[in-house]
Amino acid sequence: MHIKSSGTSSSSMNTSTSLGSSWLDGSPSRQSPNRHGRHTPRGSLIRDLNESPSRKAQIEFNLMLNRNDRDFHERLDKAAAERAKIHDEQLAKAAQEHLRIQEGAKLEMERLLLEQEQEQLRRAEAQQRELDRLRQEKAQQEAEIQRRRLEAKKQEEELARQAAERQRQIQEAETRAKAQREQEAIALRQREAAEKKSKEESVAAAAAAAAAQAKTIVQPQPQVQPKPITSLVPGQPSASTSSAAGVEELHRKYIALHARMKAFRKEFAEEAKKPGHPLKQYVGDARRALRLRLGQISVDRKSSQNAINHIRNECFNVALNTPGPTVDIRPYLVSQQLNAEQEAQPQYPAFLLYIWIIFQKSVIQAWTSEADTEGGVALQEVGLITASLFADKTYMFNGAVPMVDIMLAKLHRRCPILFGIRGNTSTKEGVTNLGLDRYRQDENAYARSVTGVSAGYASLCLRQFKGKEPPFPMVNYWRSVALVINTPSNDIYSGHYYALKGLLRDFTQKFLLYYGVAAKAVLRRATTEFPNRALRDRPGVAIAADLVRVLADSWKKKHNLVIG
Image (tube, rainbow, N blue to C red):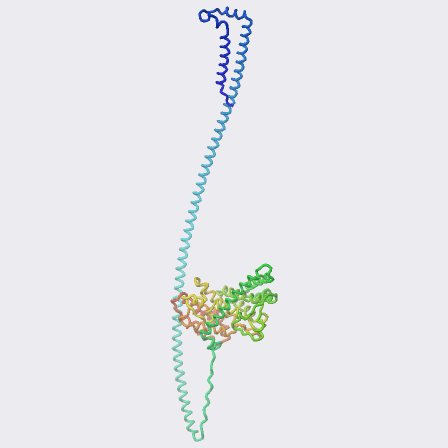
């Protein structure tokens, strides 16, 4: 507690003064009549005081009180001084603490200011780095744009050069064809003249002989006319099947089948995924094994044989032998007819049908991925495996009805051009009929798809098995080629040339082997007349037509094959 020493001292002084005053006021000398009138000698006063014992005691008592009062006040003053000293020391300590805190605050403020400056420097450096990065990216982009421009310019120049070269080749081919036609016309006229002369000579000789023998002939015998010989073009479809209405109707049936297959595949897969389903593990393993083994197919026949054995054992045999639900097979057949016995028991393993559906999807993907590979060996290996599985009676319905409609439905959906379906790019249905609905914005992907699927279809049809009926008859190949090259000019799009390229590029030798001279005539027409009918103002048609046109040169170079 802070005590005001000055107040205490004043109180002590007042007390002392009060005591002294009361004592002096009570003394006889203050009450003496001579107090104000006469000076009393000091010795007389002392003597008077000493003479009175009570006065002496009173004086001593008063002196004692004064001493006590003085001692008391001295103690108070000392205590006050000590408290003031302590207070001053505390004030000094508080001032020092205040200075220390103030100094710490100053240092902290300096530290914060320094951190702010450093943060500002870091931000400035980061902004500068970002600006440098953006400038560098901009420079790289500009360089990339310039490089692409140069590449585009070079590509345009190369395309122009190739176009000029193709034009030169076309002109040379036209010149050769014109000269050949002139030579053929001259030869024809010469043959006709020779035949006419020979006929006239024969008629004259016959007339002379008849005149010489007229007398011996009683009655002329009627001349038997030879039966005209009809030459059926190999694989030519009948009028009923080749009519536009029949083609469209069959196509609609396969498209409907494809929709049923898709719905069944999703429903079966979702059902098999449910926890505790007895087929869950088998379905997953078979699906993964199928994709894995198809991916292992290569140009090596031994590895392909190994792959097909694994596909049979790990996929088809498992699906066939694993107990499970069955389905009515009739909704999944289009071209196959069932007899009365089969109609009575039309059940087929649902798991095996599911394997067929995912198998054909994987096959189409494999064909598409191999579309650009020259020679098509791996693609044909996939076709061999596919055809052999469809030809295996083990997996047929009732051991007699092949499941080829599953494959044909997928082919009708992905490449309708193979089956004579026509369309245009102005309607949604027309785009779908061209197989272009999935690739409207990517011509290269469309070309790979149509080329790969067409080549895969050729690998299925141009196949024979010893002692087995081929699941995809060879006549189907001829029919597809004929349907493509007989397309009217107004209905020709780039997809027709991609399909023809896939059908012919790697299968010329087999085509000639099976069909001989007729195949050669078809090849000549496919690589000359059909490309010339291209409407070159349609997007992609001119380039696609040239891909077919140069096939003849490729066959000549690789196989020494001259078709015209």
